[in-house]
Length: 313
Ligand code: PEP
Ligand code: MG
Image (cartoon, rainbow, N blue to C red; front, side):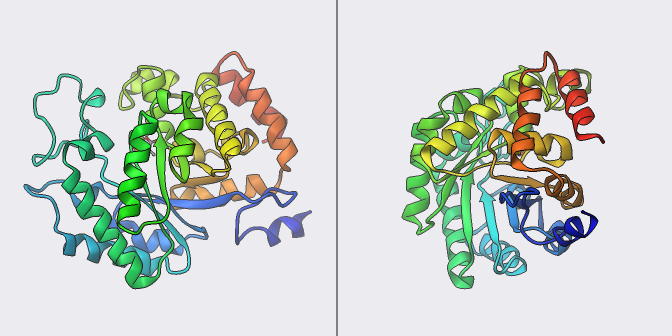
């Protein structure tokens, strides 16, 4: 068994019985690029592009963006890169697009809503991503943050396709998106659950408030119910459903997510070896048992304890 485990300690992620689960890295800027590219991962599952836009008076130019995307696609040559388009607003206001006078910025013009207000910003970004991808023949996919409606997902996918980008997905970070995941999946090419914001909006709990950590616990059964519904909808529509929020970094929770039907996990590079090892040690059927345990638990602590006890860690 030790040998078997060692042999699966690198390469594509899979369960003990060979069910594939793509293991991907989250990337937040060029400073992290070398470390991310060195990770044993199948690519980038969440490339946060806010760093290009923050702390400046004007949006970055097409050329500046193209150069940055080129660097990332070069470092990940032969591997997929999922680029999330600008997620501004809320805690990341931008002078050239955000309103300064919103009373509830987390519920305001943020994420894709920013792009609906200023489509030229999105178009420049998509054009720069597409140009760099074409130049390097890279496997590039784009996804939109803070999608609430299937019509928004369709609008984004249409815009992406008009730039020649063949794969466009939606993040699931708003409960409405999870509740209508089937329509959302039909409107785009893949879904990616952002558990940080999904927890914030499901529990009406500011994700930055330490005092509310219990509500924001990614083991909360209510959050897992929304993940389960989204994964089911993706399977029904034949579209992949990943998780790119912090939940994917917890090895035991990763088993639960796979048991719920999640097809890829994206996390900080340092977290991936443990997630990989957990997958390698458990069959998909075992993951499904663990998922049922967690889903049916009365609270987050019990869910975590039951799964950890069963896993024997
Ligand atoms: C999330 O909300 O879970 C997510 C992955 O996006 P961000 O943390 O950048 O908001
Ligand atoms: Mg988010």
